Length: 142
Image 1 (cartoon, rainbow, N blue to C red):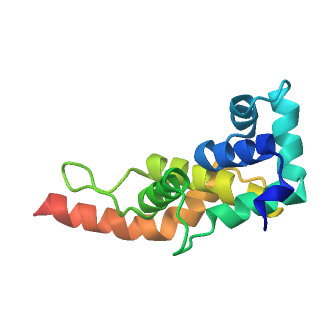
Image 2 (spheres, rainbow, N blue to C red):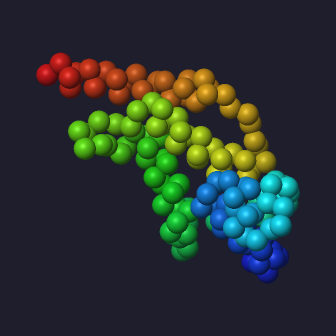
């Protein structure tokens, strides 16, 4: 997609949305006078949502340091790949929060928005967490 299809304000909105995952905050930072309405409206515009999807997609040629780093961090936390000072994985609450942040940045912009309740995220992580809890129990016992 060519950037010339977006206005400068729409481009700023999209870039801030990739960084924050919050449409209202992104519209405010981009300079819209009515951020709440403008944020929702921009996410529904095909040109804006396509631009966001294109920029979020990992590529070898181009990297958006801020957006990619945020996405990589939330993914690593959700998967339990990041360890704390005691070499323990993130808590279930932290993993659930990371999954919500990822969903904000990916599910909403693809036109497949689904309303998730907290229990759905817990169920999605449950299988992986059972293995983590087993390993933590073994570590504590030794």
